Image (cartoon, rainbow, N blue to C red):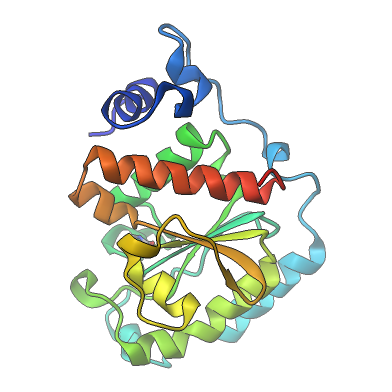
Length: 238
Ligand code: URA
């Protein structure tokens, strides 16, 4: 459905974005999309051993977790993926079927869209950001995680955030934004506005699965603008 990088960017540009907002290569008629920039575009240092060790410590503490009922039906724990020293940390809701199979977050349809937004929209490699979820095991039928499941898992999300120390957190969708803000938030109203989580700038935006379901120019334009703001802030440009 998403097609090639250029087609995808042109679709975003044609259906919702100002030309000036489109990534540079989406503006030129024949321009080929460049390979995602080297990780140095957002990272100017090698991953620190301390950060890796700390993330590893969080993973070890999680173990073969049975703290909530979600363990019963999972194939495997989906801990997180990406740069342990990332400037941007994305938080989603919970693993879906593909994630449960592969052991990696955001590798299904919603993940494909998130990856496209990161690599073809922001023009940074997916491997330069860190991606995780509020719960690490797949809720049956992809239902929203229950409060006790979120509560059991949230110390591990806190541990991941503390280990990575991102410059910006992007909360994908209402459950992630509500957890990190400590209250039930209307995501369509608060998206695009800056908040803080433990002193770290937090940008709530729409979940990619929601964007796939409601594939409107307005939703695409809004997510694009939120992600651009997050990238700029992570680079100290805003
Ligand atoms: N895949 C994930 O890993 N998390 C989500 O929230 C949705 C899909």
